[in-house]
Image 1: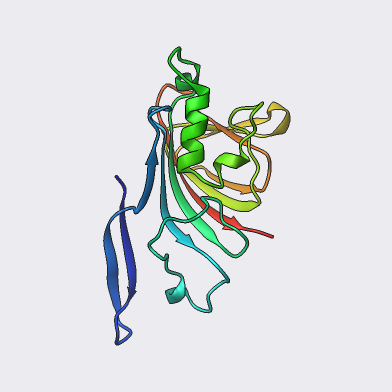
Image 2: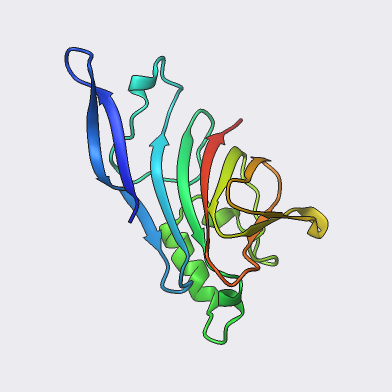
Length: 177
């Protein structure tokens, strides 16, 4: 479980710790062992005039994909792709579970090309651990290692973990028009 520490301001304007505890929105998947997604922060609605007003409401966001003027911070652990090729993998069960736990994002995935998806977002990603491949159209791929940074600009893509170990990536998604 990821610990999330959030700062804010007290009544006199001094900085303070607003919260310290587990990330409030976490999903793990029985149908895809090792796949975990945590939403660490979400903003919604029109862009606030100052940073202290960019606070999450505390309720589960309606979509894991931000709309225009919204943002999401996600921590994703990708299991090795071998999980999807195992004899026990049930693609329909995985799809149902993702539709339930990742609203907005699950609908973006292509049924005829597993993993490929497009969202109208500007995504910043940094690999924290493991190795992951970013696949684009026509099979173009780049291998990414820890500390590698990606700017993904609303392109059709998939994340492929071709290694034998999990890969963890931190994403900041900014909704665009």
